[in-house]
Length: 85
Image 1 (cartoon, rainbow, N blue to C red):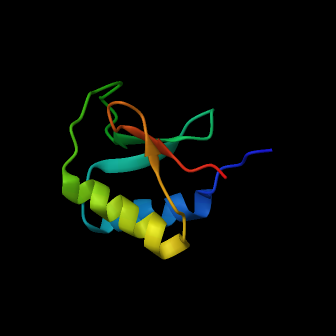
Image 2: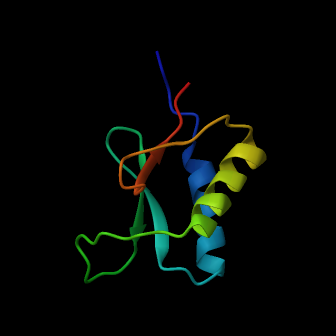
């Protein structure tokens, strides 16, 4: 069975970093075990966002270096990511 290498604890820690930086971004788990990068706002239902390379570097640095995950995979828009193993 293939399982997610990313745990909810890891995501909570990354979300805390974003919160401390006063970022509106948050990682949310989907039903399929992937994680969406979204903007947390009570008035937004859906919005397309274009993230900077700096954000992806921060995300990959956290999960790849911090937890030894070998690779993050992304959907075609870069708004959802996963690591299964």
